[in-house]
Length: 486
Image (cartoon, rainbow, N blue to C red):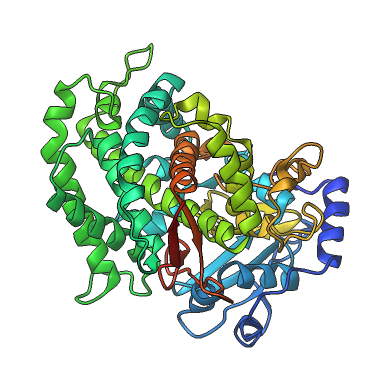
C-alpha cells in the first residue's frame, strides 16, 4: 500500500541482526525476570494484506496495569530485557492500553527524525497534558517550529553567559554550607539548590522562600502524576495532586507576569516575555505561562538527576573524583564564567558518562498520525509509541563494556558516542531535541565544580543506589553521602 512507509535498509537490517544476536547487559537483580516474562506474546495488529510488513510482537503483562509497575521497579534493566526478548520494536501493556516501545539506534533515529511527519507529540499529550499543557515538548510541526524560533532568543550564547553569572554565585554560597558532621541525603540538597537556581535565573528572584517551597511541591506533584494509574482527578490520587499542582503553578506565574513583561532583566521569564523573531512573532501571556511551567520543571528536575548521578559515580570511583578535582583546582579560585566551565574537559566526560548510565528522561513519547512502519514492523494510526533512548546507551555494538563507568569512552580517539548518531541521546533528538541542554550542562558543571573545590565525598561501603522510576529516575533513599571538607 503506497501510504505505508517501508523504513528498513539493508545496512539497518545488518546492524539490527548484530544487536539481536549480542548479549544484553545483565541487571543487578534477576528478580525482574519473573515480571518481564509473564504474559503470552501476541501481535499488536495484523499488517495489511500484501504489504510484506511484520506485526509488532509483545505481551500485555498484568491485568490493567500491564508492565507499568515492572518499569517503575526495574527501569532501564526492564527495558533492556524487553529489547533482548522482542527486538527494537515491541509492545506492552500500560495505563490500560497498548504501548509500542522503540529502542536501538536505527529505530530511534527513524522515529525521532520523523522525516515524513508520521509521529506526533500526542504520546506526551496522553501522559502529561493536564500538568504541562502546551509546553514546548507537547507542540507539533509548524506550531512547534514557530514557538521554538521565538524561544531560541532566550538561549543565545550571550543569554547563557548571563545565566551562568547568576548560577555560580548561588552555588558558591550554598555548597560550602552543607553538613560535614553527618551523612546527608544529597539528592534533596541538590533539588533544593537547583530550584533556587531556577527561581533566580528563570524568575529573576521574584517570589519569597515560602513561594519556593510551595512551587517545589507543586512541581513534584505534577511530575509524579504523569505515571498515575488512575487517569482522572479522583480524591487521594497522584493525578488529582498533579492537577492541583498545575493550578498552583499557573497562579504563581500569572501573579508575576506583569512585572516580567515590564522588565528588561536578564532572567528567562523576562526573556520569554520580550523574545521577538525578525518577523515580529511574540508569545502571548498564556504561552509564556505554559512555557515557564514546563521549562522550570525540565530545568531543575533533569539538572538534579544528572548532578546526583554524577556525584554518585564520583563517590564510587574516587580515582575519577580526584582526577576531576585536580582539573577544577587548576582553574583557580575566581568564579568561573561560561568559558572557564567549558574548559573542564574531565568533568564534561564524567557528566556525559553519568547521562549515559542514567538518562534523566529514559522514555520519549510519540503517537502515530497515520499507518506507518518502523524497521519493517506495522504500526497502525493512533498508536502510542515510547522511544527508549536509555536502552541505546547499553547496546554492545556501540559501547564497550556498557555497564562499566568509563568517562574516557567519550575522549578522542575512542569517541564511542560517535559509533551512531543516536547511540547517545540523553537530550533527545530531531527537532524536539532539548532546547536547554547547554544551560543544563553548564549548571551541572558549576555545581560539581564547586563540590570538588570544597569537599571530598563518599557513600557507605558496599552501597549501590536504587533508582525509583515512578516519574523521572531518582534515588529511592535520597542518596546518602558523607561530605568531608577538603
